[in-house]
Length: 400
Ligand code: FAS
Ligand code: PHB
Image (cartoon, rainbow, N blue to C red; front, side):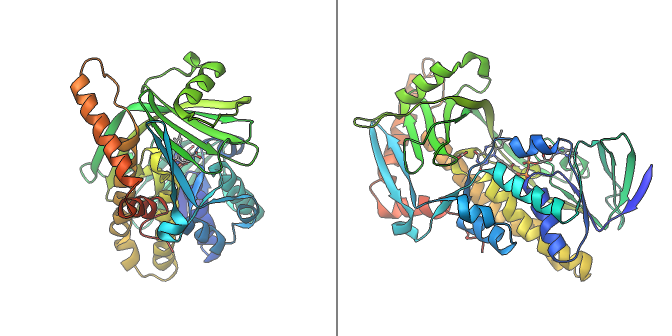
């Protein structure tokens, strides 16, 4: 067992862990990041694609937006589609703001490149990660490195940035956490396709067969999603079936969906999950380790980075300046934004997805359908309603 020291031990090299390590380094605070997957896996993992303006500003202020500013696609709105009609919501007109398409994979690549060039202690392919002595002022982070050597790192603080399935949230003391959770009776089948997008901005579509979303990654690569049953097997969806269903749900008169080779496809379950508090002693949770939102509101990644901007300031004050007030307020400071994003993501999901099981409960589905269509007609005809959607989609409260 090799014994080491650092100021902040970080579990997880997803966007949250990597950005936290970078922001701490800018303030002269050293950290050790341990990641169970390989660098290649982390860089290739298809996830989020859309950044709020505040997230872009946060990355720019941290010196991480060079490629983002060159390659990101700024969008001034979205389309909402239902009953064969496609309506544009103009965010710039409604709230004077925009969003940016820049994939999470690219953010992770940029962050890993930066941390690596800075000589950061960033360890991939670790196993046996453990956290201990969290109630003391010298918590321990233990892990086995890719060569099989066991390490124990004495830390001032440990940041659990290890996602929904990580070890840090379960390491919180029994009985401390309050968990609010909702599972949805559907999932998203997502594809990455080597074909130029058939739209200039995202199309969110409610169709009687289920939700569909046309997003993108670049002028050459499209990202599209289909609502499917929660336990759907991707093997039941050959490429031609995916394109046929996307065409069926998305096409409107005078518009056609361009198809192309599918580069990647997967099924993602959907849930809302919030755990509080996000701190216990010297352990702090950030990102998916503390909360999960259905991706309909494009909030997951933005929320994770918003947590980190608050956590970095708190840990700099605590570890460098011996001031604890920001750390003491960390969880409460994050929770307001967490619940706003959780509510908006649930609202968008409930408005656009069709609850399966129509045959058994036709009355309930007719009521659900009419409520959803009324909400969609309201949002696409009332400036007040459209402004509410635009304000939340672009990020509320604005991050910085
Ligand atoms: P992450 O899960 O990204 O990172 C946690 C890291 O910790 C992982 O690399 C994991 O390997 C590592 N780890 C876990 N346990 C460990 C251990 N014991 N030891 C060491 N390392 C460990 N958000 C959107 O806004 N739009 C989307 O379309 C969207 N699609 C998604 C699709 C999927 C399949 C998933 C799972 C999430 C999606 N999200 C989406 C949400 C996603 O973008 C998250 O919000 C974002 O990845 C959160 O970042 P982190 O908190 O860093 O967690
Ligand atoms: C994506 O491009 O992956 C994306 C965009 C918006 C969403 C969800 C996913 O709401």
